[in-house]
Image (cartoon, rainbow, N blue to C red; front, side):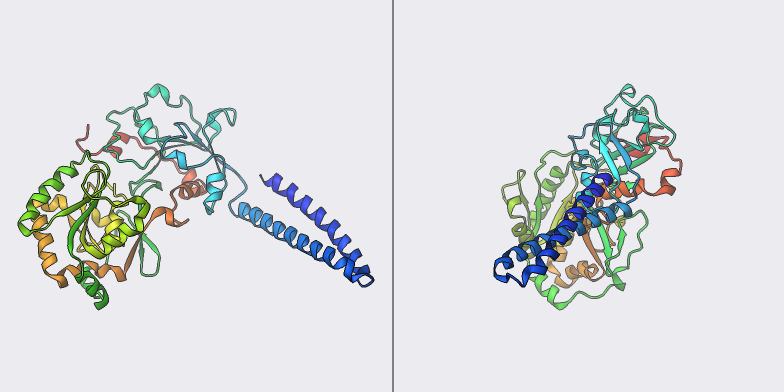
Length: 415
């Protein structure tokens, strides 16, 4: 790629030189025949401007590649490149360049003979949902000391457990939603009041609710105008977590308070089209006190974008999952359905709806923290981060192995 850019730059410079000479020659005789040459001069000047802009663009690309280091890091996708999570990774350097990653010198392929021998790749990556179903014979038979074998999955371990020791001592790195993975692949980013990324992480240092700034009167007034208890947007009606059963229990408990959960999507009577997501978000912000952030399975650190619906749209999230949620949010800004149970949860929801000032306390965090999706920034883009760790010489040179991978990955009691 660097050679191609250099050749293109040489050609552009040569053409530019010829046009410059022509321009100067014409300029000398311009005074003799201004009327005839004006249009030609203007056309030449426009052409020169375009070439200069093109040269500048090429220089920026070269400069970007220089900043990203010249040595390519080769990534082999051992499992299918057509399935999640590799399907969005792109081929060659394309995915990293198009995302404007800080490092673009990573090269992706599914061709095991691309370098002649697969032991020459820097990383061999395995998509979790596929590799957990493979036999040992389907794994690479050989590996080089410099290579990293990476397990990659954005899917819940409860849905794709290993349930055997076949993957013990195979992986050097993991690229997952688990907060202790070498590379992160998740849904949520937490920033502080200065915009600095602070989480989620295993040990979060949150401000206590009493230390946070009071909620503004403007926000309090907006919250008082809400009229509906809770919303739930859902399309998967049969989950391993049994969330749909819990919602039925909650609906029954809410009846005594004349409250209910409005279920939108394939699993309920109400509709809010994904093509009109802004309208759905506005409705959630204006009308609903709570949003059900219910996961489809219970796995450590498995917290999806469902959490963001409430946090980003002025509805208190009610969580239902296997994560330690203090790694994602400070206490006092959410309700935990699994801890409370349906009966106590319904009573708490009713209490907060009847006490506007108490309900407003759940929004004190908004002046101190903000929540985003990982793909919204190059800093946190999951694909960029994988190329970044390949350029971390200290991490690359360090020796690591997941000896008891099954214990690390599978949820307790799953198998």
